[in-house]
Image 1: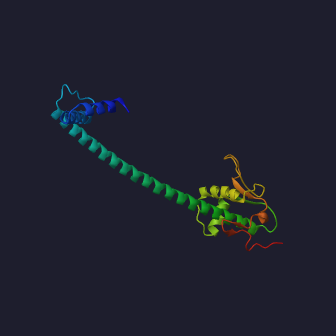
Image 2: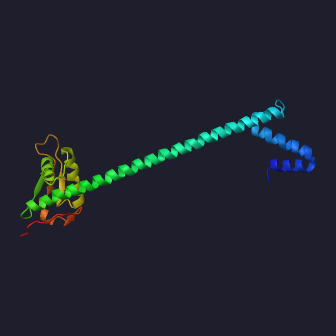
Image 3: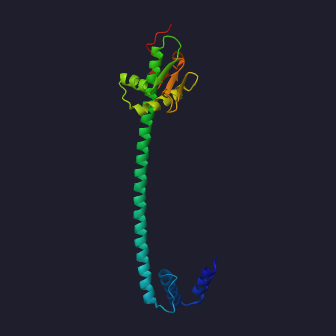
Length: 197
């Protein structure tokens, strides 16, 4: 038990009811009015008015904090919706790149009569995809090349050969053994319709 509680219990036991009520009232009022109130310079009526004002200020502050919490929750909800939207776009974009990479790899398997190297620069990737009704911007063809290397997962079979800007050759996707590519990539049957020897 703290000293304050001991003192309060002692006052309850030693004072009559009226005096105890008066002390309790003064403690309550001066306590609510704040620590900056000096009981010797401020009477109980003024302290009561200050306590009421302080309670009103605290209620206003509490209402502002509640509104701030509501605003922050709305902001968090908006951010979560935006994050979900961006994740959906990213997933759709990734799935699209997977499919586009598979279309290019299927083309490599179709044009290879026997195990042999196929090379696809940005223009050829764009031509293959547009022939398959896949619209793509020229700058996005490099993403498709990277995705093709990633989905095959074997740089002996498929890799991106990057060239410096000063090189007369373009960065390209090299498919060394198209006939050895996986059977299905991103739901596309790579060897479907390919004649085997």
